[in-house]
Image 1 (cartoon, one colour):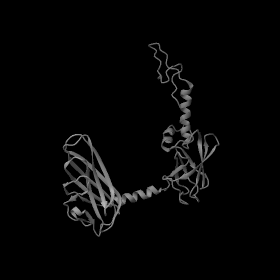
Image 2 (cartoon, helix red, strand yellow):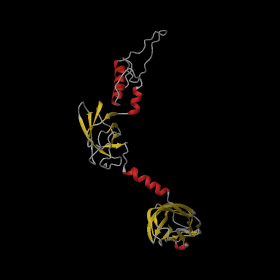
Image 3 (cartoon, rainbow, N blue to C red):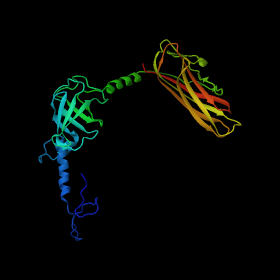
Image 4 (cartoon, helix red, strand yellow):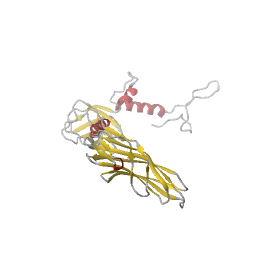
Length: 327
C-alpha cells in the first residue's frame, strides 16, 4: 500500500490539513484510496491471521500482529499437509511463516507442505519440509495436534519449527558448549625472556612448576603427563623486540610464532613489519592451534623466530601458553 496524499496535491508526501474558517482556507480533500486501501490492508491482515473480520472486536489488527499468518488445522496427510491461506498472497517471501496445527504424523522423512491460494485464488504450490539445519525429519517427528511454524528459506523449501522439532545443530551445539564449559584450562605464563637467533627457531621457556597434566621441561618444551591426554585448543601469545642497526632501509622483518607437537607444526602465525630506521622494533604475535589431539608423552614446543638481515639484541618476552582441554 502506498501513501495517498490529499486530492489535487502535486506532492506525493503532502500532509492532510483541517479546515481553517478564520483564515478562509478549505481543508484537505480525502481521496477514496486513502480510506479504501487502508481498510483493505487491515482486513487482509486480520483474515490472514485466521480471524473472521468483525466490527464487534476493534483490536483484531493487534491480535493479527501477534499471531502472524495462521491457517488453523492442516488438511491432507502427515506427508502431504495442506495449508489454505485466508487471503491470496501474490508472493511467498523468504522469512514469511505460516502457523498451523498438524492433523497427522509424518510417515516419510521428506514430507511436503502444500499451500493453497498462493499467487492466485485456488493455486497450489508444494514445498519440501526440512529442519532448521536443512536435515530431514525423523519418521513420526511431526506430531498430530501440535502447533508448528513453516518458514520459507528462499531455496524453495520450508523450515519447520515448534512442536518439539529439534535440528541436529540444536542438539549438538549445547553438548559442545557443555564440553567446553566443563573443560580444563592449563596456563603457563611465567615467561623467561629469550634471545632470538636470526632465522632460527627458539623454544620459549617458562618458570612455572609442573601441573597435574603437564611437565615443564624448560628448553625442552612442555610434556603431556599420564593424565593429560585429550583434545585441546592451544594458544601462544608473545612479543618480540628487534634492534636494527646500520641497515639499508626500508626492509621487511618477520616475527613468527610456532606451536609444535612432537616436532610437527600444528599452528603458525607471522607478523610482518617494515623497518624504516634503527630500532628497537616491537611486534606482537598470537598463534592458535585448534582441536589438537595430545597423548601422554607428547611434547609441545612453543617457539619464536625473527627474520631480518640487520639486527642485534632480538628477544622474545611476555609469552603465555594456554591449553584448553575440550574432552
